[in-house]
Amino acid sequence: MTLEPFRMPPILRAVLTLAGALGLAACSKPTDASAENFTAAMNTYLAQRGDLCLGKSQWPIDVTEREIESGARNAVQMPVLEKLGLVAASVAEIDLKDDDGISHHMKVRRYALTDAGHKFYRVRDTVQADGRKAPQGNFCAARLSLDKVLRWNAAPGAHQMVVTYTYKAEPASWMQDADAQKVFPVVANVVRGAGSAELTETFRLTDAGWVAADL
Image (cartoon, rainbow, N blue to C red; front, side, top):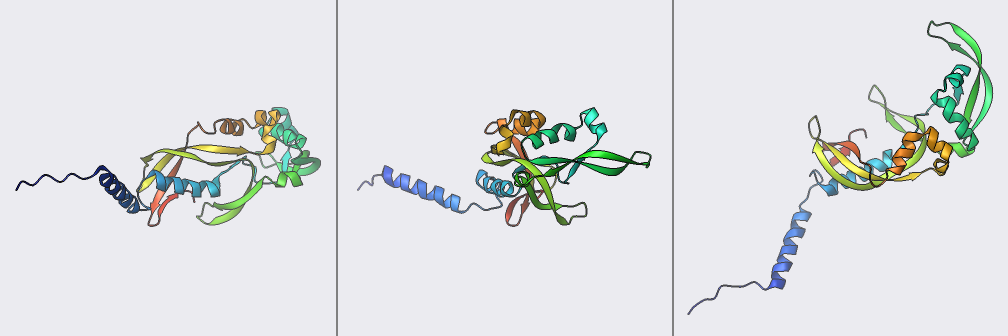
């Protein structure tokens, strides 16, 4: 009797192939360097650090006559925020020391957040120089979220990866103003780059998986 070789039906072959793929996926660990794991880690990071802020943490902000004459950053930006109803201006008197330690009494233009402006002031825990976390506020102009993880590469240091990604941007309503875009060009460029511009973030490997280095 001649035995013919067994031929697996195509449908059975497809089922077994799918089962094998699912089995491999089920064995994937949170510590693996994979698109799935970095996507989850990036979403966690941006949920906590996705605010695009202006570096204005201490309020009110005083602008001196000298800063106005030289076109300093706050002297240019604050009037635009005032026009948009986000800050209110008043005149205040302060004593300010110069580089030689000599105190000078002067009048300044003082800008304070309005109720509308406070809606864009975010407070979060920030790591201090001594390693402790302390709450710190900042005035923010947009919110970023993940579009897509593109690639990852090993970073200097043990068990670290630099992840490259594209992002989505949700700008504050006042960033639609042409003057705001002019005095905050970095924010305007980031918003325009949504979906195409690439950003990077460093992640470190922990026992539980990948975590952004600055969390």
